[in-house]
Length: 162
Image 1 (cartoon, rainbow, N blue to C red):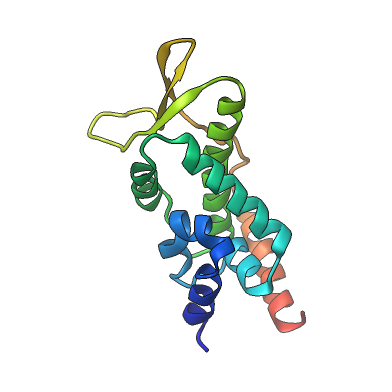
Image 2 (image 1 turned 60 degrees about the horizontal axis):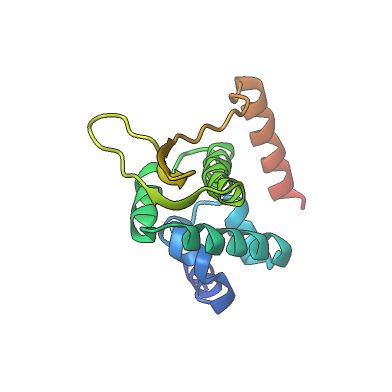
């Protein structure tokens, strides 16, 4: 069975429906990343956490179909380097957690906003009877050349001698 077929089989499981809803197309492209590994290696704790987080994220949105489109437009998992693809997934996770955290703090009626010609926030929500814009930023350390080369070398070694 091909990598694509294995990923598709795992995403078709009912417990992975939230993951399939939000990232199915991107994950089925077959580029390795930590979520594809979790699917193929059956890392149930990782998958359960992602599926529950995505399901809660979707239920907090008044327009979940726009969120799916926003994610497919803004989060590219076809980058050349694995470290970049994993970073992209972490950026997505920051968006999911932002909505979940703010909903616990009393924000509601989240609306995913699609990027237009003019810069727009990532989401709108209601808080204290006011409409607010939410721009999610992920403050992660930029990848430097030495780290990228070291991670490539490590990944190569792991592939050769697991």
